[in-house]
Image (cartoon, rainbow, N blue to C red; front, side, top):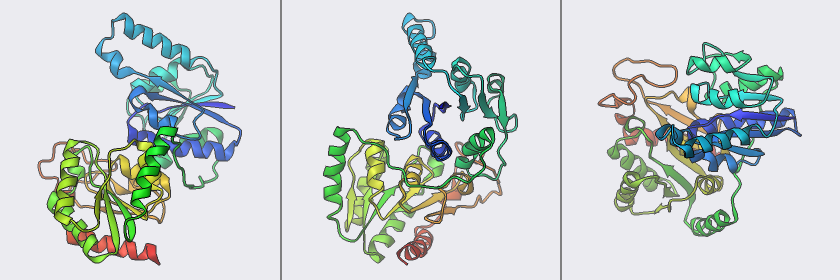
Length: 355
């Protein structure tokens, strides 16, 4: 049996869809699964050991020059690649108009998607035949698995298992060099991923420095700082200079190499961000901080993962994300947290891990 999953973007959302692969292989060991993904995010899907084929869609480029011959040649090539196989089922985990294009073009008599209460954009409902509305209280990963469970009428729970992304020969060489250095660092190794795409998902610099200072001063650990862009690199360098003792700066690496390194760490500290979701796959304990998004909805599942949920001083409540996540001028739900408070919470979590 061959299944197609449509989840084109973003990177974090794609990772939230990966448990569907584990569930399908748990229920049907011989199953083959293809995946439609935006070209810019294809690397991580290609790295997943349970994906048979990653089919790249390039809507970002298409929208820029919709009427050019090159664009239409790319669209026709995508359709040809997509229609090479006929699928027993197509599962649209995206639920928007963009994913509806791929779901519509795919060859299958059974197309599965979210119901009217759960869709992101209503035109998606026109191209699917089987619709399901997951309960609101589910973690986002379970929302995706819910579609597969209810379509196939297999309700056994997903067995949470460690998953390590595949590395190319070149990536394996990078990983080996980095790990050879990291494993020689003193104490337990904690990877720190302090960045996030949105300001209101990040701690204030003062709180972050205080938090990490308390860890490096009170616990026998080495901190390894991760960064993803120039702003995050500048912050990481400032932290390394301020903390000095047992703090290292990791070179920028591919997501697959980063996730493999995470699997060797003793713990990961992160915000609500892509690195946190990578850590959730790796089997490594994580400590995360949430503010304008819901820890209950987005944090990795299981007892190895602890999350702190900052409270909104203005009394706003939300199911998934705060409606003013991008526009709130203060972000005090997370930027008002103190480093000492975070260290107290982390120290308790860390002591439980050691026991």
